[in-house]
Amino acid sequence: MRQLRVSTYDALLKEFITAASVHEARLDRLDHDLIAVLQEDGRASYRVGIALRGPAEPVHRYLVATSAVDLAADAHGAYDAIATIVGSTTGGVLAVIEQLRSLPEVGSLKTWAHLDIIKEDYTRTLGRIVRP
Image 1 (cartoon, one colour):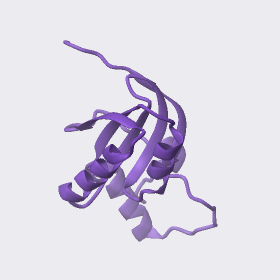
Image 2 (cartoon, rainbow, N blue to C red):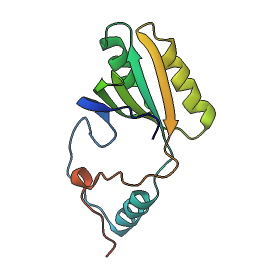
Image 3 (tube, rainbow, N blue to C red):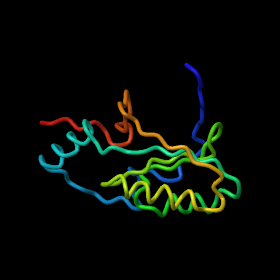
Image 4 (cartoon, one colour):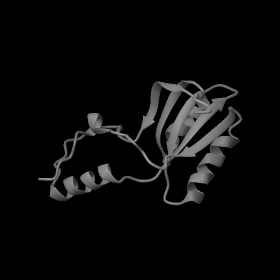
């Protein structure tokens, strides 16, 4: 190992699992099958570590308002904020990253893609979907 950079979440600003409101829903077999497939093989995503040079609030507002941001967290350590950006094309993801980079409060960005995720588990929030 040449370098270890550590950041911890202080507060989640946005996550793709959290809804603005909660409504009762009944899931049928097709819903369960789709969720099970997505839990095994979801979308590719890019992570962004953000170092600020100004107030955090404008950057937080951008991250929360942008639909391509699945998760955003206030952080301590190597980055002031960490986000997961997703999109159907690399160009679309890069456009969001460049918009973020252009904010005057952003000092620097580091981006990376996870080529192989060892563990990323949201079942505590969603519950494990088991096919009947």
